[in-house]
Image (cartoon, rainbow, N blue to C red; front, side, top):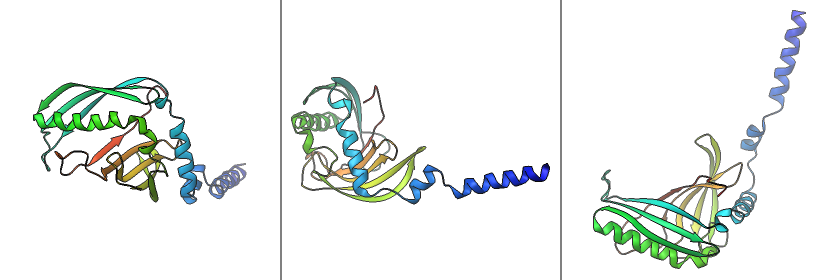
Amino acid sequence: MIRNHWYGLLFAMTWLLAYPSPEQERKANPPELSLILDSMERTEAQDPAFSRPHEVMREYKLFHNDDPKPTSDVTAQVSFTPPDTKSFKITDAQGSPRGRKIITAMLEQEVASAKERNRQEISRSNYYFVLVREQNFGAVPEYVLHIIPKRKDTSLLLGDIWIDARTYRIRQIIGVPVTNPSFWIKDLHITVQFTVLNGM
């Protein structure tokens, strides 16, 4: 009986090794770039954030060179009314007055361009894409894509995006504006991280 038990266990282990898990199979055979982009664009188009009115509080920290202490800390309330109306209000500003000027100028541009969302979205109409690698963003498998703007526009970034390999939502964007949004800024690096809140 013991011998048969070990034979059965050995057979089960051999079967598991012979058939890779879905995660192993996905890593061994990543989808083509076009399929990743098809799924990403479809997911972004269905995002309820573009059809529901909502407000968000944003905190901006501005730094000078490599100084770890921010020179300005600005908080803004940004409101969105479907289909394409944005407004903002600076609710708090600490530190250098220049920080408030910079953030106000950037938000004014964002409000003015809200009616041209299609020209800002991460899609093939605005960007060229290169599949760089796969990696985990925390515990979530991600596709990392390099994005290259197709035109010079202050709302477009040159950099990388992280796409959830399961939901095809964009989880993170890191880049620099292809055109400087303000003469107050000499070197602007942007990092944006997303999470799901109330389905948006």
